[in-house]
Amino acid sequence: MESQNYPNNIKLYRLKFYPRPLTQNELGQLVGVHRSRISLYESGVVFPSGQMLFRLSSALNVPAEILYKPFCDQERHRLLELKKQLGIFKTKKFWR
Image (cartoon, rainbow, N blue to C red; front, top):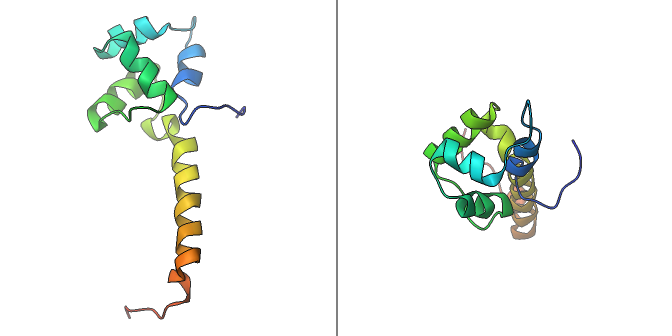
């Protein structure tokens, strides 16, 4: 997938919508929010609720996890680095 400066793929899939790209206003109408809210989701300022994520994925006809894959990958990497810094991987297992 192409590189982008957004924390999610909402804009990418909105612009790749078939048969023509959707505007933020059109997507907002499909999911029941104002265009400005779509802009906030796309820019990563606001994270949609679970219900809204479902609406967005349904409107764009893609699985919800695909919309936030870049964000999830980045967050997973950040957490692994934090665990390494804290030495969590060096501790003994506390379960059997």
